[in-house]
Amino acid sequence: MIRVLLAEDQGMMRGALALLLDLEDDMEVVAQVAAGDEIVPAALEHTPDIALLDIELPGRSGLDAAAELRQKLPGCAVLILTTFGRPGHLRRAMEAGASGFLVKDRPVEELAVSIRRVRDGERVIDPALAAAALSAGPNPLTQREREALNAAVDGATVADIADRLSLSRATVRNYLSSAIGKTGTRNRMEAVREARRNGWL
Image 1 (cartoon, rainbow, N blue to C red):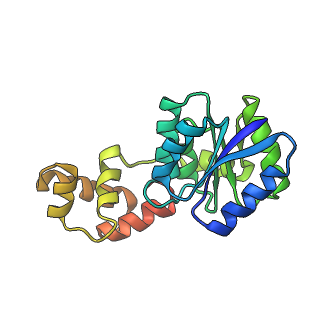
Image 2 (image 1 turned 45 degrees about the horizontal axis):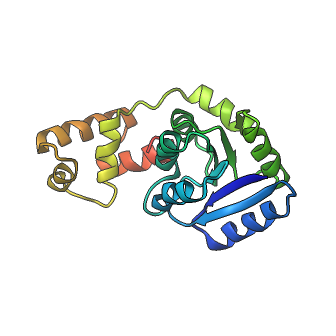
């Protein structure tokens, strides 16, 4: 029996996926969570074989949780299931140790097949997204630049960002300026939008 943890913030989608997977003779959904910061505690409690994670989750992204799962529960394979297939997200998922990456607009029959393939040690990636990721190139933003942009998402001032990241204001300005330059935008909010559009955040 393949034990599955399901992380999806939309209740109806989460319930539908759980029902569909429970109809499979060889699968059991052992945990369902609606927020990213609930993923690792639930996985440690229920020890699933597969964690089926959305990316955009309240509290914490599925990509960040995937990286921690790899460290704390290496026997649990991660399969990312997302609405928006962005090349940058695929790259980050692979870097976080995910075994698969599927977009939600694929036929539902593919999901159970993909879970079995991941359980058997295969890597499963949406073909169109894989091709797009190869042509898109790597994420140009450094870890610190991504942190600065993430801290700027809610319109925070440079002083606020500096406090959050325990950095000097001058250093924060440098990171933001560099991120704006790399994204080809005019200000930090445009840089955030562009980075998100490309899946770099």
